[in-house]
Length: 425
Image (tube, rainbow, N blue to C red; front, side, top):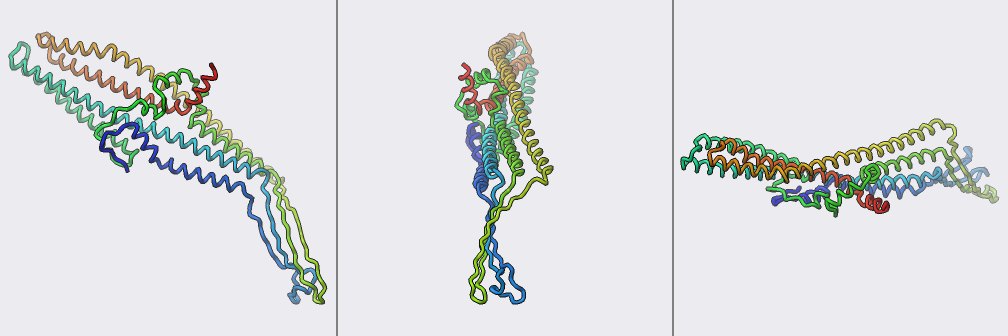
């Protein structure tokens, strides 16, 4: 259980979800289990020890009455069928690598999903800040209007004051809705902590946390995206690698099924002890050595069916691998276009709309002071400034979320991409 009374950063959230994930903890045990199974696969089956009294006469049950009576001890050892033990070791080794790839993928997924929930909380919290700014604007506007009304300036009336107060009441409803969004976002985020989030606010996210802790800047990520060929690159993504390694597991299982068509040999040896005859004559003991072999030739149809099933499972997993690569590449292209669009919108608002709206609000306020504009125009212009800030906040948070998604896709394979780009130059 974990709660935070101070500000909670995105980096702290990412570190917590990875450190306290039950799936990742279970992966360590799964890897140990597979290592032990790999070790066990190297051993032969247990030898069989047998003992018996053979040819005991029923007319006296004497051990030295008949020369054929003997006490026999034997041991039998079945040899592995073909290279099945080696193939089983390869299978468990591949399974262990699958678990490792799935663990890497899981850690990245946890960071991505928790980061999105954290950003929703950050967005709602920042909207509360903008609501406070809007409240202060309306308070100043109310003071301005009341001052004009008190001084009996032409154009100032009681209706103007009422208009501002109505805007303030509407703002209180907006503040209530925004606070609800904050609490809902905190509730969704709390699932990663197993306890309610009691932090008053989130810290501003760092560039490193936006890129899931990788030592890379957003500009470097952009260059990586521009220089990479996604349908080749994402073959090495942990999600795709897990499926590729599962293909190796299925290939080992196919090879094991093929080994079942080979003969299995069993070696046995026995020692037969005989007592001396009743007249004292010595009797020789017996030693027997034998070899058994099973002949897997009479169930060929069954074996072929099992081999065909194993081959189909392997090819199906290969198909899943290709589909995963295609899906990752398609997702990357969508996110890339989204990031470009968001960047263009951000430039439009920062370099154009924001300044123009601020100038317009100042101009209308001046016109109202000169009785050349209505209070509705003033309120509308003031609120338009806050709307611009809200839109910029939304664009900023969407950009951060898009960068998180792109970091999830590209940065786990960044070393491979950089080596490929460097080799091609």
